Length: 261
Ligand SMILES: NC(=O)c1ccc[n+]([C@@H]2O[C@H](COP(=O)([O-])OP(=O)(O)OC[C@H]3O[C@@H](n4cnc5c(N)ncnc54)[C@H](OP(=O)(O)O)[C@@H]3O)[C@@H](O)[C@H]2O)c1
Image (cartoon, rainbow, N blue to C red; front, side, top):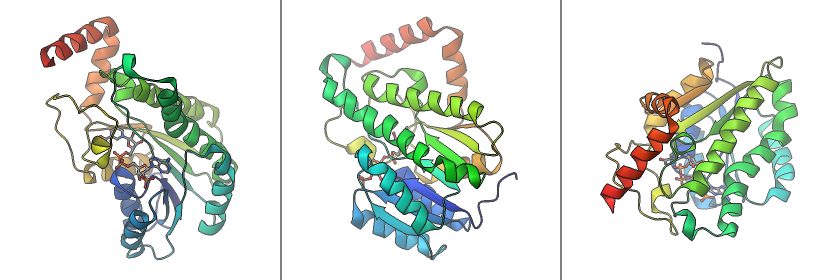
C-alpha cells in the first residue's frame, strides 16, 4: 500500500447521492475525515450522518459548483474548515443523452461548465495546498469519454476533456509527490439515469452495477497508486479494441444503433 487514507482529509464533490455518497462513506470507513458538497442540503445531511459514524469531524457544504465565480471562496472555506485537504475527488457531474441535432449551444456550455470547468477550477484553487501535503486528486470521468456512445456527444466530450486534463496533470506534477487518478464508471445504478431532459438509456446488455461496486476499485486505486480504474474492469479491453481501429468501432456502434431503431 503506497498511500494510507487513515487520518487524511478528503473532499468529495457531488457527495449528496450516487457514486459520491458511496465514496464518501467508503473514505470515512477507512478512517479519513470527509467533506462533502452538493446543492441538496437534506441529502448531504443524510450522507454526512452516515460518514460521522466513522469520522465524527466530517463536514458538508451546500454549494452550486456550476457557479464558477464562487469556487475560489468555496475552496478556501472547505480547506479551512476541514483543516486542509489531502484528497480531492472531483465527482459531481450531470448527464446529457440527446442526439447532436437536438443539442443547443446553451446545453453544451452547461455540461462543459459543470463536468469540466468546475472540477478544473476547483482543482487549481486547491492545488497549492494539495502539493504541500503531497495529496491525491481523483477525477471521475466516464467510459463515455472513450467509447463515443450514441446521443452523448455533449457529455462524452466533457469527460474526454477531464481525462486529458488529468493525464497532463500527472505528467506536470511528476516531481511533487501528488498522485492523480482517473475513474471510468460503466453503468452504475444512480439518479443520473432518471434526471429529466435526457433520452432513455439504450438497451446495451451492459449490467447496471450498484454504487457499492465503485468503492473498493476507487479507494484501491488511490492506495495502490493505480492511475486509471474502470468499473467494471472489462471496459479496459473494450477501450483497447476501439483504439486498434476507431473507424471500425464506430461502424459497429452505428450498426448497433440501427438495430435499436
Ligand atoms: N452512474 C453512472 O453510470 C456513471 C457512469 C459514468 C460516469 N459517471 C459519473 O459519475 C459522477 C457521479 O454521478 P452519479 O452517477 O453518482 O450521479 P448522481 O447520483 O446524479 O450524482 C451526481 C452528484 O453530483 C451533484 N451535482 C450535480 N450538479 C451539481 C452542481 N451544479 N453543484 C453541486 N453538485 C452537483 C449532485 O448533487 P445535487 O443534485 O445535490 O447538487 C450529486 O451529488 C458524475 O461525474 C457522472 O458523470 C456516472
